[in-house]
Image (cartoon, rainbow, N blue to C red; front, side, top):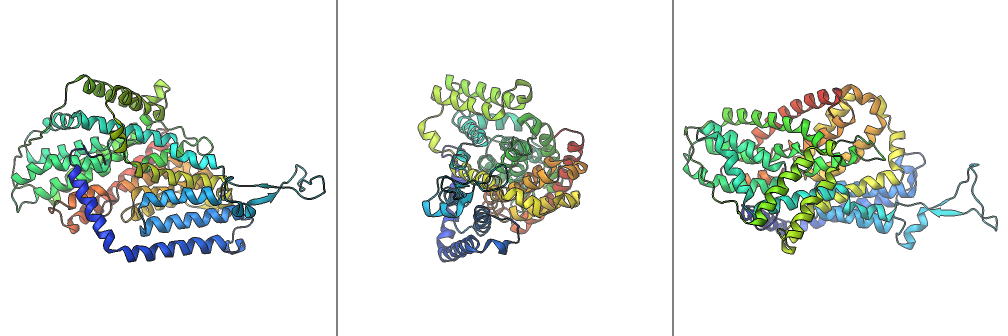
Length: 519
């Protein structure tokens, strides 16, 4: 979260409160950390035969240990989620890479087998061996994966929009058509929040829109349910709107990364292609949320007066931001036609804004690097699964092709939804997407009947975005709950309805789009 963003104080208060709670539970966190490390050490040192996977190597065993360690750390939150991702990368580099510590390399030496299937001998007639490990360059490249660059471009656009007042100006213009009727204002906040969260972080969008909403809430009757509707509209809009673009939320980018991997599924889904389907889905879900909120929390006051402070600047740097903002989004949407990859397009605002002085060194320090590092840790897990050969072993050991395709697709979405309500959405995607990508490679034939592999992986991203039943489920939920206007039971009721209905609507549309060749 960058400090000059409208509503930054709300996010700061939320983080301060969370930090105080963490201090109170330091002993519990220490026990969780010790437990996770013990599991890592036990799995690391068990005899390979105990895993029940024929031909399992030491390198693959270490990958299993790191994966289970990451799972427990992300679920239990013994340390911040992004630090878990960094620890994954460090462990892999020092213990499983071709540049690992010397005593770790001993278990990674394997005999060199010739074309005749026999060991290759040296001059003395001794069998030769070679280091079999993950390339350290591949692991470290996860920090600069093209998807990471896509996110950085999104963050840079958001910072520039805030500095020039473009966000406030857009909010005024976009909310103006909805007039003063209470029900229409609610729809306006849902749609505008959703559209902003397509290109800004969900947390930043929620903080900004709650700031705009604060004066409105004061004018509504204290005993009216309409206040609840408006307050819930912000997190719902932010969570659902994020599904519309690859940069809207990290799980989207993680799913797209594995879908487009040239050495994996190689689906070649572009930014515009993603939006062509996911944008209408987001709009359908936002309108559905509007009906749900009006039914559960109707307004008693018929009209609402909106007053949004802040004006867009008109100096030459601001004009550069407006033009670059529009050109970047246009290039993203037309990437299939221009031939310019969306990851490359993301560097346009970075270059233009840095050269013209729109973005300064201080602004760069405000980029949410913890999100980027967390995503990188998930990518490193994927590299480890592929390069150690564990992916191949798992596919051979588990007959995915015999599974019911509907159960496989819907089940994975439900598991993701359940997990993401209690742990980070990004952590959930980091854990599930690499495994499901392996499943997709193995079961491409049977998944055709339910829309293909895209349905499987995009369903995980969808499931994570719909996970919003608790204040802890997402930062936007926590921010809205901090207003004191929403009871946890009310948030849970709406969250469950949106989750169930959203998964049904989403999977129906995903399967249709997949079968029609749109994804």
